Amino acid sequence: MEAPVQDFNPLATHRAQHDSRQTYNMSTSAAAGTLETGGPASREEAHGAPGSYTHLTLYVFGAFFLLSTLIAMGVSTLIQQDRLRQRHMQDTQLASLTRVLQEYVSRTLDESTQSLKMLRIAAETLNGQAQERQRKGLQELATHSVAQHPEIAVLAIYDRGQNHPIIARRAEFTVQELPSQPSALEIPGGQPFQVQRPMQDARGKRLLPVYQFWSGAGHNESWEGAIALIDLDYIESFYQDVRLSSDDRVHLLDNQGGCLISFPLQGGRLDIMQPITNRSLHPHPDLPGIYQASFDFEGKTHIGNFSRMQNFPLIVGTSRAQAVMDAEFLEMRRRLIWAASALLVVLGVIALLIHFDMRRRERSRQTLGEVNTSLEERVQQRTAELEQSNRELMAFSYSVSHDLRAPLRAINGFAHALKEDNEEQLDTQGREYLDRIYRASVRMGELIDELLSLANVSRAPLKYQALDLADIAREIVDDLRMAHPERQVEFQAPEHLPTEGDEALLRNALSNLLHNAWKFTHTRTPAMISLSVQEDNEVIRYTLEDNGIGFDMAHAKRLFQPFQQLHAHQGFGGTGIGLASVRRIIERHNGSIRAEAQPDAGARFIFELPRHARVLRRRIRTGATRSEYR
Image 1: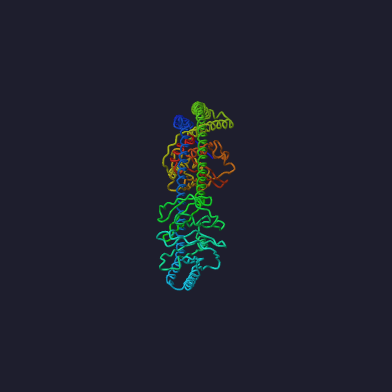
Image 2: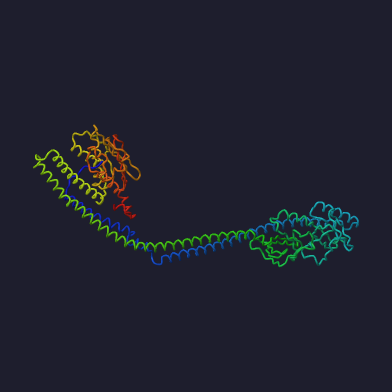
């Protein structure tokens, strides 16, 4: 299938050669600019600015050290804050334990001293009665008090001068000897009670003596004082219930700060109890009445909170080993340090990777600069060769259009003159030979015109504008109907088929397609030709369909090649250039074309054009591709 033969016009051919030469010059200049990677700016980018690699390396490692410093400062701040938080939490726990312990010990001592007071009142009440009656009354009261108060292990009353005390005790305690009575001078001023050092009975039970001195002999001439032995197991059981950690310790100190007892008692023996050393009490900054201390105990450094009791010459306190208090903080510090170290290692690896990548890029830039320099030289050399080849091609085209046409016209003219002047002298075979010479010269002229037309299609610059293919198609069909009024052809097309492209080239392509459809449907009555459209997001798909003789799809690859005629021997004529021109025009518009057909069942030509051809062409030009120079 091919386009119709066009008349030869020397003036038009000369103009086409001039336009082709200008188009070629523009194309080679643009191609050279493309191969030079976009001009001076791109060349400078390829070579790289002097010292840019060194500066970037300094920036990268400077950023790494800055981030490392910030991370170290942040981790240090978090560690300090966590240390303060842990210390505050631990200190708050110890202070709470001290408060609870103070209340419990105070309540225990209050109950014990209340029993001592009741004994004193009973002794004053029984004053003046018989000695045995007094002893019996006090014995009963002491026994009753011991039974009522589980914290009291022993109650004893010292008689004046004879030192034969009245004792009431629980059955599990075997106290064989009471503590000696303190003198009146040993009783602290203003405090009727004295807490003495702990003691143990024969069974190892630990007891805390609380002595009350009965002053005023006139009131009671027989009794000098009373003592209550408090069961320390009772206090220790409370400690076991309220302690928060197995390393927590409870301390009872005398009024002078001397250690009376600490819980839990190592080995349960008072004689091996370790003292508190290097202790210095100082007021708590946040809790009034609470004192803080750091001291050595059981071979460890302890942090403790202490509180002085108001009604008794005692100081109670709780402590915890500093290693235990700092365990959670140390674990958190270890995690933060490991996390920061891992983060610094990752940042260091990233900095090194960036450094190596920049060094590789710098080497690539240098290599690219060298390659670009040699490429520019080769481009200039190839451009000169291409210009020389183009000049030779132009000379050949000029020779084809002028030098070959002169002898061709001579052959044509002399054949025509010979036929007119000497036709009667020639036999039938001679006249046939003469007609063949004439037709061959005419066909050769047509082929020359088609070749020049195909060259102009490939080289003519594109002028994009908005077009309506429906109007162009109807104009071409109207011309065909005027040229062939005897034909019955039904043509269908939408009212509008808008697109963007070069009007002259697209008119040429559409004309070739419609002429083919018109030519290969001349055996159909009526002939059917239709032009339809289907729009996608990026392209517009046009379909030109006819009910002509069609063709075999096995030969479809030859369809758009120059001088390929699938129906050359069936009397349809043509040069085989028309569809090649159509394909070249569509491809120059960044589109595509294909054909579908069946023998004797019509043909369908489907060509696609970009929806926004001008925008796409600007993108191609910006991307420095060579497709626009084809």
